[in-house]
Length: 307
Image (cartoon, rainbow, N blue to C red; front, side, top):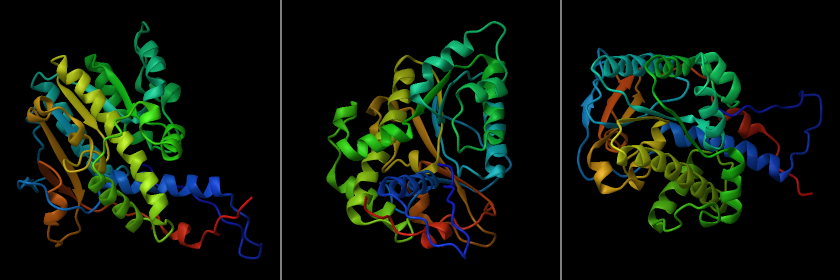
């Protein structure tokens, strides 16, 4: 998910009190970054196929779950080329996108039904949420419009995610039969990736929100795959992990005709992380995007105050 944005008072001013709700919101935003970039986990049952060449990425299966690090421009250019090649080969997938909240699907459908068709910027302005660098996603939307591909909103909104954290999965229609081991693993990873800002209880609640998002994305993939359509899910690497993400919630039939591809960052000379690579059916590597430390502001932000 997009990197969180935080604000601080000037050094000469006293810290501004932060309400518990605002604190949870800030940490929740950071959790989307961790979830979408991929988290360390035990290896899956069989080894993935490494693909370290950046010359081409061939999409081989009718259902593809294609990961990303959201702000990595090189990865987006690489994935766009893969989609263009797939379309040139005759594929016409349903484009399922994490970047659109599923509550906006009605608006999205109405917009796409217009004559003449809108352009990508119009779609983004109408239904694109805040926090995304839409310049990186415009090419996918433009290709979908050019080729008449359905665009499907697959994300759970921040508000619904907070509701899941408060009430659990079942009240919002999600499958609550989540193995306890999976929740513990996700919670442990979330806690470890949050700069010491979370306790175990909060991390477990966020793990429920992560599961909700994975189930929502899997539900959209499943719907169109069962209808016989080709499907391309564009989502963060954490959501396309085969051990803990959307692939885990697919039916065996759909999973059998799908591929989860991790698009991972690797510094020059850095050996591949075998455990991370094992979370996917196939992995490709790109250079590391230069970015500021997303935890820096969280480390120095004042603790929440009770009201």
